[in-house]
Length: 101
Image 1 (tube, one colour):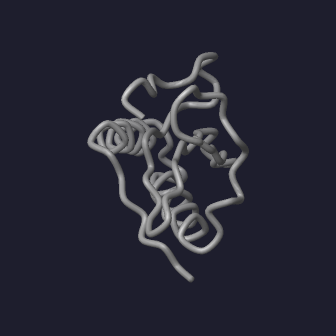
Image 2 (cartoon, helix red, strand yellow):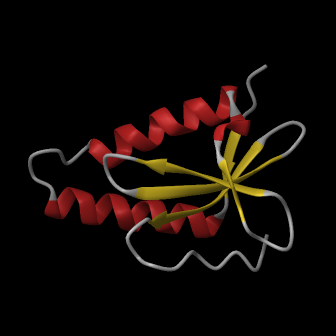
């Protein structure tokens, strides 16, 4: 059963920032982040358990890596949907602020 994938306002902002940076700095593949993110959202819709558990004291947060663009998608699976809570650069050295999750 497919589940709809929703995003938080914080994740929306992060996705916009990454996409803008990618389009400005990766002229040979300006759409790569958008394409990889769309594929990942489709995967989360059909197989949300695929992500690796991410240490967090609240809800069960999982993450998957966007291999080509080196970003992580952090999300929580609910009974009837998947909620993306952050999109964060894998090379940043620290994780995103998930205090609201």
